[in-house]
Length: 466
Image (tube, rainbow, N blue to C red):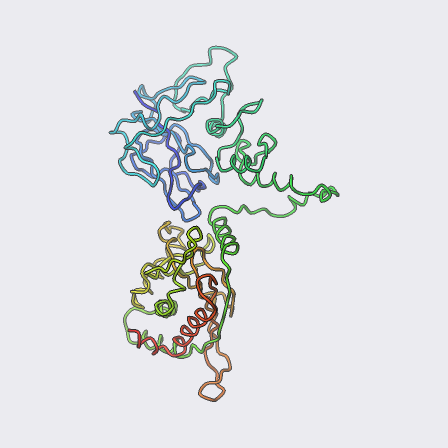
């Protein structure tokens, strides 16, 4: 006899609590194999294909493309042991019946031993909480079921898949007309902490699903002084509304946290990059793989951090300690169609210019394709931001929390410059360093920036550290 198993959105690691459905890779009625990717989701870190640990026939999908689901919400159900044409092995659920089985009832031969972070198929899963008897019963959707017509006219009307998902996920107190249309525990907690009754919130999601944006909008409206709502002009819907979620939401959260927690300061200096550009041209003219300017700047940063390790650190606020980090994992800002991301080059301090060039190229291409993994985007200890590619001279970078500093590099352009006592046209660049003032004072930050500028002006300085 077939068993209907529910596959929930797994914990994708790195503390991620939700993901947005980008593209379904299977349809209801499709036969899936163990560990076959079934859906592509976008997290705050990267695009991920999620494999299903069960093999069988897909009986239901939960969530349309563009829907944001929390970790632990149902993704789909699979009839294990069922045939694709819905034969005798396909279980049919009567209206109001609960699923025949859950993930912990699967036979070991019907699921994979492979796991994602936070879920697996080898150990018993926590028992699902039953819906309160007074709540409307939810039928588990099985499109191939052959159950006959309802025996009595009083049978409940069919519940759409999205409504079933909402009802099945409800754990709070039901409203008089039925369960609260809210899935995310984060949304329920936000409303509870702010004293907001979710029965008063109108959901903008599928089937009236209440999203976090709906709760935040209700809270804002409640806290706005009554005098502000004078003329009958709906300013809330006057402009285009772009949700701060996914990658954009993660960037917004990180930048806000940096500004809130880090007492940063910025210093900058102009440097004559003529010799650095000449050195790069000579290296590339000698044959072999081409060396990028970013790789040379990364080498300079690595040597500068060896001299000023205070800037390769982080602050443990709970312990009130500065933690100096032994390796240099260099992040670099990369603009992609999805937005700004900061891939990380591991062990940048031990790499050659050629190795750095290759790794920058690989991570940049992966970022443009949207296939960076969470590991590619985390663990950085210092960030290099070359905003000169946008045609600007200077900026005051925001420190990439929880790092302690970021070096910004403007465009390199010909400018009048006093060289060897005479006015000349030289290739000039502006360098700016934003740093966490808790880890060092201005003298250390200035010394770091001056050493970087000296290496840019006279690359031979690096020979003394080889």
